[in-house]
Length: 41
Image 1: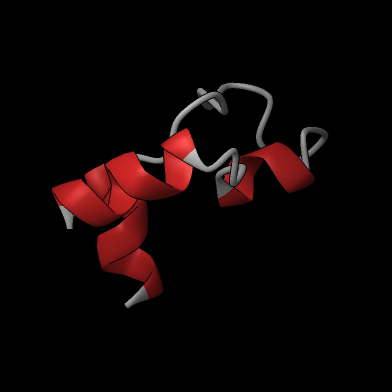
Image 2 (image 1 turned 90 degrees about the horizontal axis):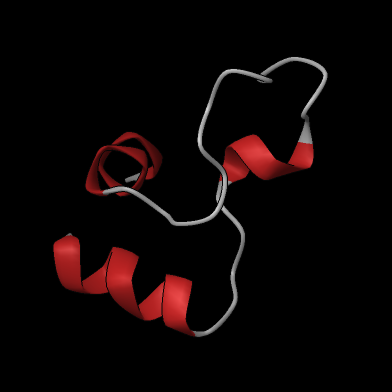
């Protein structure tokens, strides 16, 4: 999951939190985290 998150971040894929900033203003949106990949899968 870490390598998937790293690869997606390097490819410029935004994390899910980046798409709805009004709902998730407190979340870091620059990189995909392993926990986000785990939740998606």
